Length: 381
Image (cartoon, rainbow, N blue to C red):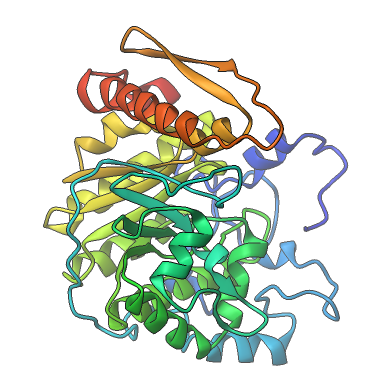
């Protein structure tokens, strides 16, 4: 984390001062002369900095950020992604996916249940399937995987790469071993993966952001070349980041599905409008219909449905509520409450999960896929 002046005492104030605001804040003086300006586009932030190197931590011996002040490591990091440009990312075939579900329950583990969950399509977290120490999949067969998570073998499987940094960064560190794991995932019948959402940060040098974005593009290509459909996680920090994604997507018809999360910064009232507007721009520039898979707050679904062919929502609340012994109770079609439902020690929650999934999915359909909702862009203004 970069050193901030003592008057920046709250996270909210820090975020406001470091949020890129072109048009309302002048560009940092050092940006136009930077060798990466054409790709980065520069920073326009309230915090008075000469350029993004103001966010260098100064701890070159322990820092792993992609920063020009560590010349030797920086050169290695840029070399491993073959530069920050997107145009040298490998072209891939279009990989078709066949499922019609709009809401997909996320399963975290197989504990507290006696039987396999009976549901047509389910999501698992990518990191939960990988043994990062050995660089292999934890499961040799589909039967082993489904037994571990207690899900039916006939279920369609989606893997989500949206996760905390300490759980997704090891995927990149696997290097060429990623290709072997992708082949294992293909063999056990994974239908689709959302690309890991390698993070961009408002208080990091911009070269770290550019490195993360290029890795997302490279990993997308690896999955598709390996025969697994991949949803591109086209997120960014600035308008320039999103315009780069828009041109990349427009030029590559193999990109059929996007991924996005409304869990962290993009879910906040202050930034939700910006992220939705950038997704709208990408959808318009694509020149073709796209699908999008989202995690996080579902109130963005009605807005996104106006832009994308399908909006697929990965729903994590049902599993968490069930494990915590809570039961869904619908109040009409537009409200859902959760009541505490204690169970005997060690009692399975199979029936409770099935009930909660049915009620939660029906609620989400009625609330966000059918009835008109207030526009989240206007509401966030």
